[in-house]
Structure formats: structure tokens, C-alpha cells
Length: 171
Image (cartoon, rainbow, N blue to C red; front, side, top):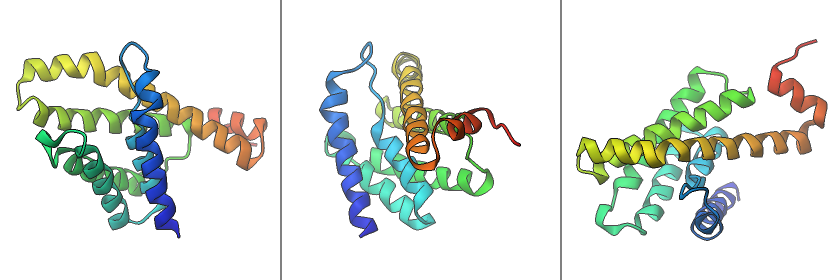
């Protein structure tokens, strides 16, 4: 049942990314909802299962760009592996740390993807990275931050709990 739920979450995120967030972008920049879903799935599943979810997400994204077939599947699988290693080595509980991990994951993903997309033409790669990837990573990590704060607010105990999570107040 959990696997079916995860597949439906992947489908919903990709549908939202191609419809709603495709229209409502900020200066041509869209968030990477697929990366957000991958971050959540890697946090809630095992090692191999997270990599499989990354491969599935990437393969579905590759259907949109068949001339680069396999590039997204490779980069999302690699990102699932790297995110799993980060999760093993660090405790990612503070909201700002979660947002930084999302920012860093988006940056690494975009760098790897742009290497294939531009065929290692560094001038185009750097131009695309600066124009789209940096702001897209900020947008994606901001959305992750909002989702985590709202989730913690509704599930864990309200405003006081969220403020303590934001600023790490200990009693």
C-alpha cells in the first residue's frame, strides 16, 4: 500500500509541475517538485527503494525529453543515492537544514543534468546554471521550507513547536 501511495505522490507531483507550476512561474523559474518528492521518499524509504523511486521519477521525466533519454533517470537515481548518504551521516531535523539540503540537491542535480544537456559546453552550462538553476533551487527549497513548517504545525503541536523547530530553542 505504501508503494502505491508513493507512486501516486510521484504522479501528482509531476502532474502539478507540468500544469499549475508550468503556468505560475516566477520570472520563468519553476520549482522542481520531482526533487521535493524524491527528498521526501528517500527520507521515508530504504536505501534501494529510494534509488528505485529516483529512477522511476527520472524515467517519467525523460518521457518529456526523449532526445536525452536516460539522463533524468541517471541523475535522479544518483541524487537518491546521495540524499540517502546525507541522511545516514547527518541528522536533518532543523527546518533550515532541510531547506539547505533541498537547495544543495537541486544544484547538484542541475549541474549533472546540464553537463549532459549542453554536451559539456561550459559557457552554455554556466549561463543556464546561473539564469535558471540558482533561482530554481531557491524556489524549490523555499517551497520545501513552507511544506515542512505547515506539516509540523498541523501534525506536531502548533505554533510553539514550529518556532522551537525553527530556532532550536531547548528548555
